[in-house]
Image 1 (cartoon, rainbow over the protein chains, first blue to last red):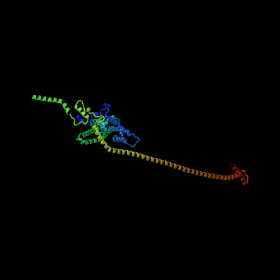
Image 2: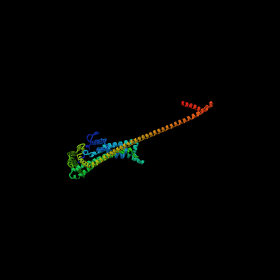
Image 3: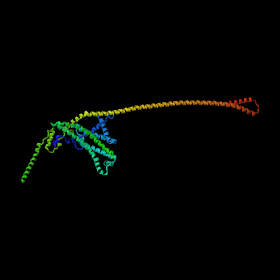
Image 4: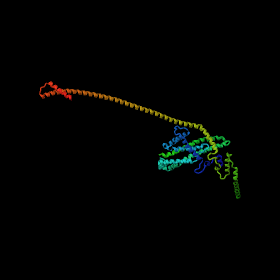
Length: 255
Length: 227
């Protein structure tokens, strides 16, 4: 078993959890999150520097404007409508932060998506959970919110015995849990695939005869690297749009 | 039967004890890596693990740095990233550039269009304002003209009316004078005859009519002269 571990040279888990332990411990994951936060801030600070310029110019301004436009038009307007525009700052920050902390997966010498540790996905999912519950209670009142969350319209009374527990688990437990797991598992899986194909390419290169099939492994590594860009974007989008959907369900109960 | 069982147990026991004693030595001799080690660190780690004891994989195999991934991963990951980068550079970036340019152009055109429309609207507004001012001036001029014409007409009318009034007055005065003269003449005649008649009756004296008439006339002349 130990010999097998060595054969693929997988770096142990501890190599990303050093630099101190406890609440103030700092590691590569934390460093990537700091980078993601700074990158998000920089895009919007530098991208909006030229306040007098109405015609957008440069990558940063276009990125900032398209990003906000994307969150506004493709996420908020599709789910919440104009009511939801007050959540534009939270959702935009969420989108950019998740994207930046996932895209490090393919950046050479970093090659690790911070969201492959479930700490921050959990935190973000809990933030979303708190927001949609607070919005629900504030907009509908505690009792109405509970009623609208637990009792779907048009369900016969006897079935409610079955439906209410299901709805409770689905709304208050599964939602944040699935948000967290979806992001964390996707990024971890992507990272493992990249590591696997990188290690496989290395192993095939070192061996003598099998080197002929190395290009296939490497080709797949390139394809997967490209695919992971898409995944990083898609997961940021999914997390953000689901957050919007959950907030919407609290703002506009369906009945 | 019993002897055979004892012999079997003894053989098994001896084999077990020998095996137990020989196992570590055997293990140390026979566990060999499947392939030659790529690095010195891996070799050391393998030896540490092979010796056994209180050692886990985590303890023996530290990555070179807490920040960097393993060397293999860096190498091949970077290579695949570069391939992808070249592809993106060649195909992705121009597409994005075009998109950006289209977006910039669209916004610039929109802004310029708005600017142009605004300028046009301003020009039209100025034109309308000028027209309105012109119309106001025209209206003022027309009103002034009308007022002047009305004034002229009025002055004319007043003058004519005054003229007519004067004429009428003059005619009336002439009439009055005529009438007065006639009346005076009539009166004079009547008064003369009446006076003569009256005087004749009162005095009962036959006087020469012509003399009397002269007397009365002179009297009346005195009266009217003093009048």
